[in-house]
Amino acid sequence: QVQLVESGGGLVQAGGSLRLSCAASGRTFRNVMGWFRQAPGKEREFVAAMSWSGGSSSFADSVKGRFTISKDNAKKTVYLQMSRLKSEDTAVYYCAASNRFEITTRGYDYWGQGTQVTVSS
Image (tube, rainbow, N blue to C red; front, side):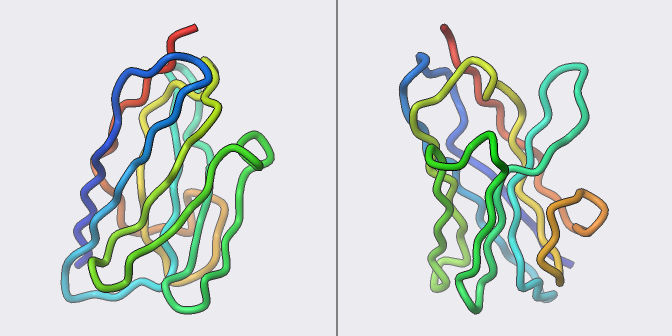
């Protein structure tokens, strides 16, 4: 089992920044950590992913150049730094774990509970 706990969400003005954290624990190891988001009435969508081992990362086109993903292996924590936030970034953000580098929800078998990000315009 893998337990994932997100934190760092909140209310921010458009153009502002937030950093989300996802702390992983448990006996099962998954090499890839992903961030997804789900806005009201919309499907959950891929935001970014990173591998623990090689440092490879991937981003959705909608966040490229504004979001970065990083990790602290010692703390087993992955971060999503979000900058130049827009109202359309408003969503519940989830972190997830996978054994493969995936950009679809189907590829992830462990999920956190989510953290709300609200961007006011």
